[in-house]
Amino acid sequence: MPAHRRPASRARRKALAAGLTSAAVLVGAGLLGFGQPWANAAANVSFDTGAGLAFTINGANGNMTSLKHNGTELTASGYAAGQFESGWSSATVTSKTFNSGNSILVSVANTSIGVTQYYFARRGDNTVYMATNISKALNPGEARFIARLKPSVLTTSPAAAKTGGFTTTVEGSDVFANAAGRTASKFYSSQRLIAQKPFGASGNGHGAYILPAYTDMTSGGPFFRDIEVNDTGSAVNITHYMFSGHQQTEALRLGLHGPYALTLTDGSAPTARSMDFLASYLPGMLSNAQRGGVSGTASGTWNGLKATVALAGPTGQYRGQVKSGKFVIGHVKPGTYTATLYAGELAVGAPKSITVTAGATTSLAMTGNVPAAGTLFQLGTFDGTPAGFRNADKIETMHPSDSRMSAWKASSYSVANGAAAFPMAEFKSVNSPTALSFSLSSVPAKGVKLRIATTSSFAGGRPAVAIGGYTSPASASPAPTNLNSRNVTRGTWRGINTTYTYTIPASALKTGTNTLSISVVSGSSGETFLSPNFIFDALALDPA
Image (cartoon, rainbow, N blue to C red; front, side, top):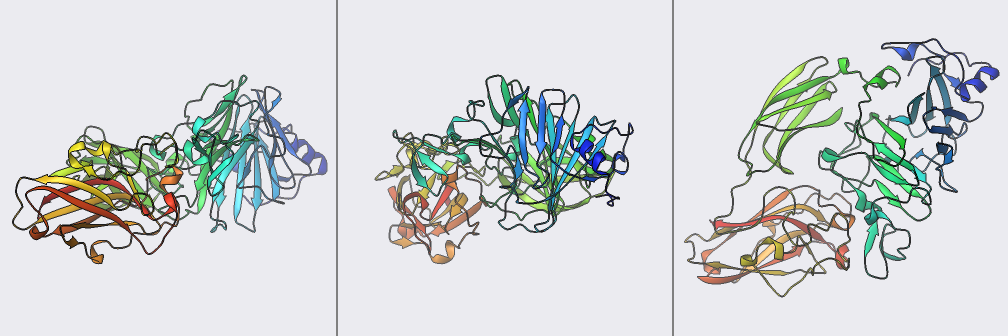
């Protein structure tokens, strides 16, 4: 941030708070050093864009206390229209204007926790642009901007995340069911980062949407997903998550998160837009000239899966999809990154280290193959997801106990019936052990090798197998990385892909039908769907 200057007069502070003070018209980069000086808010800071959006920031605690669209108040009764996390009791609120008062930047700083929230708006634009600077670890460890708006106005939002009227608690305080056994949760509105589009709610000629824009400082990789929209009945919560512990595989990244934005419409969903211009206004935001890029080639056997090259490092995470063997990743902060090639959501090949410098494009060649298909049998696809297995098509928007789910347990399953008949997950207290039959025309002389690929686990759950007097040793089922988070009950399978391999001797097999028992092993316990579990990616059998 620029150095603080002498506080403005009381009259000037009041004018700044109203967003009406004149300032020199400024163009080009470096606007942060000009315009009106930062002024402490003597009262609330209000600004009307003249394009249908007006908002107010509380001068004492930094909460957005009012958000209006075409004169209609959208703020839910008893809530803040917007705030970092659940808001603060006090904060240092300052503001400055640019372009003859046609633009305003509001800074809301809480030095005790190391967070500064920025709000930027300009005349003629129905959008509040935001960024969040996080300078140290958070406790609790979440970072989010959340808008809480009127459900009586914004009546249309993702149905799976409408928890108002769902009176039975299924688990925790965030998954609920109605009388018909249908479930709903705030977790059931998520999108993968790599495919994330603007999200929000609409109704009665109004729409409020988050534009995620720059998510390079978030954590979890290109396929991570988190809460977006939740109609609780008392408020429509629209949330931009920058970090959470929801099945998180990475640490919080410190620095400036964003920019991102809250935009108001007549109800229609907006399209994504560039926010590069904000580098001239937001402290700490790098311009395109201060960033670099990566381009190169990717090759391998991916069996028709989409390929992605992802970068991850302390200064950010980035990704680019492979098209015709080539990829481009732009807008990258200078730094050193680990590059990973994915086929589907499965990392393939060896990761590489790459250094990006400002104003330059670094070349990179990646290669990797998906695991070989099982020659004796295979269920599922080695793609890092449970796609194709029973209930995998529903799990993003329903709890496993939902009445619309297919049965999780049967007396036995057969490879002949395919993956669609086999459950996507195994729970220690629900469907473990699972019996799977398969046929051998002859027994391989050296026995067989069984691979069970998983995408995620909970409470230390991992597979163990038994067949024909053979029981897999504990060493074949090492404890998975503990992410200390619910997974499949929160609508996600995305964790850490892990493959377990078992060598089964010929003496445990026979010509004809064999029955394999797959169990969940864990040192922990739990009830029903909160018992230790794991999620299937694929199962494959080959001669040893």
